[in-house]
Amino acid sequence: MIHTFELLRFVLPHDSALTAWATLSRPPPDSGITIQKPRISRARDSPIIYGYYLRLQVDCLRMFQVCNLTPDLFPHIIANINMVLADIGLSVDDFVLSRIDYCFNAVVEDPEARRLLFQIFNKKAPTYAQYLFRSPGQYDTTIRSSTKKNTTRTVQMYDKEAERRSKGRVVQSWEAGVVRTEVQVRREHIKQRVKSQHITRNLRDWLTEDQYRHFMSQAWRFLCNKGDFYTLPEAKAIVEASSYTPIMKGRLSTFLEAIAASDMDTAQAALSRNTALAYIDKLDKLGVNPITLPDDTKCSMIPSPFRFF
Image (cartoon, rainbow, N blue to C red; front, side, top):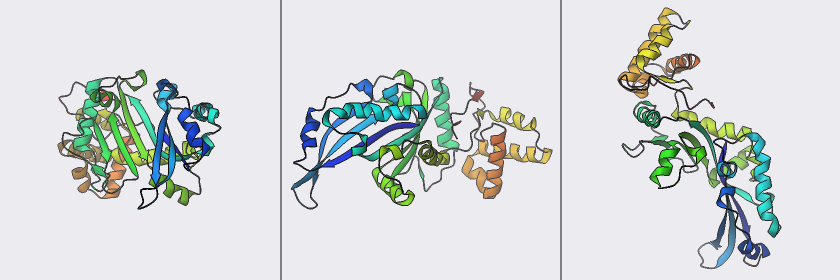
């Protein structure tokens, strides 16, 4: 649910908390809590130091060494942070939220299956040209939302194990085989949501299931439905064995064939939006993703990593 977040506290140069911050004991890496050096804040258009930002970053998955966080751990996050801050007389409530990343991690153990997932998504998934940014070859293990039109949030799905290896870092046990769907929420959007939703920037207002659902629903743009991935013959066989009428079975099979022959954009362009969405929904009810696997693949089926929707 929650992946990482950053907390900030603004202090003036003479604030005792600034001095105390320098003496704060650094928690071990496995705690998931990182104490950053104070960041200077200068007066606008002036070299004069206006104040400092005390920064604290938290990796919740590392803190508990789990693949996915559960709501029962939320109070422990706050308690663990408060234990670190107690020595200088501060608590979580003395900070404001600067950034938070929500995520869901699905384990797809077979590396070939993970590679294939990103291959077919980059080729077949709806582009939503105003939202999804693709760069051939660059994101063979990642797809992400465009930052050209939206710098306040980024939605991305990526192979966590491949990402760790590409950076030369150790793959932790809770990262092995993970396909991560993540929504990164930055300070500008947090401020916007505070104004529109009448909540605060206190961490407690953001460690909730409601916030998780709200932001993770935005990842739906990348997906077609929650169904599993099959080859075209397997997907059509499931449709044929369904209780749909013969006419509807034929239409769904034709829809699957059109996507396999081109991509979701082309297949949907030949239909009205409502009709395309209806077909996608009917396939979803059968547990079939409209994007099918190549017929020559060794994987006849890949379980959907998007069951959290």
